[in-house]
Image (tube, rainbow, N blue to C red; front, side, top):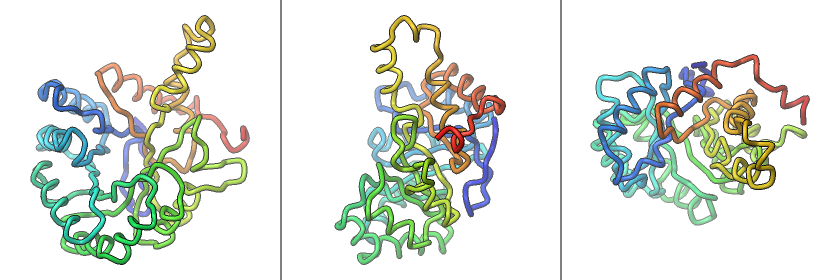
Length: 269
């Protein structure tokens, strides 16, 4: 497993992160914990979750899995105003069984005017900063589905340490390497860490290629290609993956270690 610095936090984070978004209540907890232990043993040290994933089951399961282990845990608040942020964080601390959350993020979609108003003028950001000062949170961030005026404002505030965002071979609007524009380059200029969602297109590209070119793609390892593509972007720190099996842990680890396969994306574009 290869490691990168998460922006100005200075944290050394694994290129592959464990995405807890697909942890569901109908999954066996022991099997999930065993899988997370395997991921940690293989060098993954960045784990992402949220209170809404499995209605708290994701945080609870991860909390059990990381007991006695050294790793970086990121969670979120769907709440943006002062009172609800505090309640959300206290609940997450209990479910995760930790005293400090490493990375706390506003769990966003597109950050419309109402949401950004709550963050900046109704105590959301102020509460985040107080939680950081109190030691309950180490670093601050936000997750977003794509670029928006709200995301621009969050980046420009200079208050955030990282951003979690969509970026992959099919979705380039967050990082246009042809002109070096987009919210990823903007966040990088503010020394923010960059964590990716949907790194392998949530299977959309693979399904499209296999539907259009069934014979030609039979032997192609498309997900490895897609993961290598995003890891080839030097602005990316962590690519989150919904690891569902030990095989997933192993092949993603292999892609991380095959540095010679990296592409010169700037030259390519």
